[in-house]
Length: 222
Image 1 (spheres, rainbow, N blue to C red):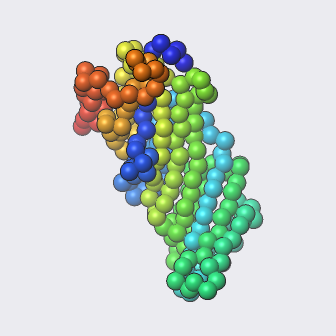
Image 2: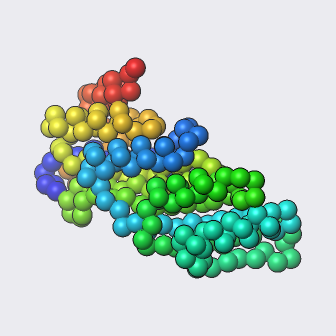
C-alpha cells in the first residue's frame, strides 16, 4: 500500500458491536448474499473454520439438546468442550464445536433440515465464520459472519483497495453496497493516509464525505 496515497477504511464503532445486523429472517439466504457480495467484490477467501456454541435449558430442553447434539456430532465431529452450570439451575448449559473443514453455508443447509420440534431451534445456536482478502501491508479486510439469536450479524473491517481519488474506488463501493443484504453507514468511513500529524486514520473532508454518501444512496435507490 502506497503511504503517499489515501484509502477508505470502513469499521463500525464499538457501540455498534463493530458491525451490522441483517433483517432478513431467512438466515441462510442472508448469509449466502453476504458471502457472494464479499467474494465477488474483493475476491475474498475463507479457511472454512467454523465455531459453533449450542446453548440449552437443562430443565426444559434436555431431550431436545441430546438429539440435536447427536446430529451435530455426526456433521462436525465430537464437540471440543462442554459447560455444565451445575448449581445454577436458571443458567443454560453450553457445548462448543470447532471445525476446520466446514463451510458455513453447508452447515446452515444441514441445520435447516433439523426443523421439527424435537430439535433445538436456530435461536439456540451461536455460529461464526471468517472471510478475508489481502495481506498486510497491502489493502486488506475481513468479515465475520456471526449468527446469534436466530439472526445474522456481520462484523467487518475493510480497506478499499483503490485510492480515494480513483474512480475505481467509488465503483467498487457502489457495486459492493448494492449487493449487500444491509446498508453501510457513511459515517463509519475514515480516510487512511498521510497528514501533517503523520500516517493514520482521519475524518473525511466535506467534499469526500458528500461524494461517498451520494454513492451509497444511489447504490440502494430503488
